[in-house]
View 1 (cartoon, rainbow, N blue to C red):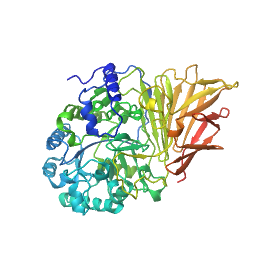
View 2: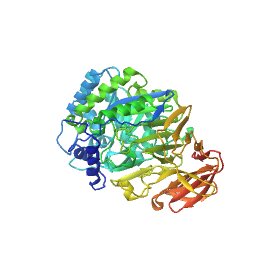
View 3: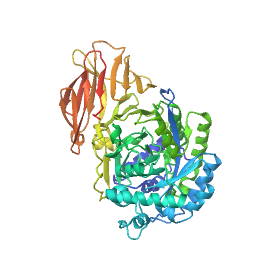
View 4: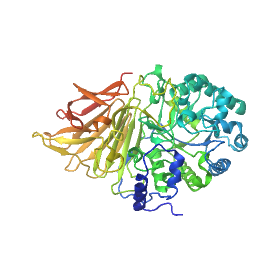
Length: 582
């Protein structure tokens, strides 16, 4: 079967998925639709920028496969994927992490198989989703479908569906059973949805080394997660998706974002399947995507941390993942031999992170080649992350703009910190200064022309004429210490320099007429945004009753009909101070 057709077929797939009603779906629903076409973009790109890394302190990839013993929705051989994954990983002499859901710890052939087959550089841990057996053993009533042993709906499967005391009981039950089974406590824990109460109890009570949590996603598996860190962080005790600013509020076990997510296209949510490294998806089956993703982790600027998770849950079935799983393991082994990235267990990544960093460090993901080889137009992106904020500078053809700015605050609590969720289909979003997806209009979110939320750049003349800045050529991105610098060559001459620092991001134009002033124009749909008002040199926001703000240095602020204009003063760099008070 040809897995790599050209861009025309990829565009056809995008149009097909645009026709699907926008609803909360599961990852299995998506793969069922995607497999009808098996379309993968695979044409090499002809344009690419330059990304030069200075050598990250930690570049790590984990192979994480998690195991369920029950799949009530359809008949499936759940043991075959585990057996075949093990064979492929061992054939390439790679370390791996195996995470057992509670049912797989107490039934089926999985424990005996792992004890017999795991090499010494493999580990076993816990996949922390709830099912009937763990609820029974914890003395908690089963809230799921009475005909099912495992129920994927949010109030049943995830810890946020239970009270804080119930969450702690479920943690204790899982760890007690794991200890009885393997003779020690689990050191690696993951789930699609982990809250601060659960994270803190695992960390404080049992000294867990590493957590895995879902990457950002929109309306998949019954929940939206948006605005959390891009790679790895120490969470705050009020919000499992937010990095701690202060040591007092910090949970001292790092969280790693799972699934190996494409940093370019996922954000705009126009591909109706997850564009991740999972071998069940067309993206994970595309050799060009896999190559460019691994190159990003191993070779592009990453600041202090570059991280990715590969692997697949067994409940997708082996036929769906078979070809791409072995392809990825082969490529991973090749990248290990080239150096620059460490393949290790999730627990070892957590222990290394703890040794290297006492609080969340700066990190980056820079993809200056289109990950699917497109050139009509090619898209590129640069993400920067610190414990204070995350930011995204995006390139689409000759256009470039800020696509995302989210800030973090120890006092911003997650929505289900103390009260359990009771419905399927929820949102868990962070504090946005600019949300290029949620703050755009419905046309843009459907892939059509409309009002796109963004931070765009202009030059303003003495006569108040406004010239939009466009890119001429290709950008470069370099790093030094905790600073990431993007230089964008401009049509008409000159360069826009954008400097991401731990607390601030700044902008300056070089090589243009001194009489021109730089302008940063934020556009958004007002009723979708959290923007509240301008206050002298600050932009003020309110989200779900929580007030936050950012500072503007060397800029004059003015509200517009569709956002805010920030006009630079003189030749000094225009600067946004994004840090909230610790």
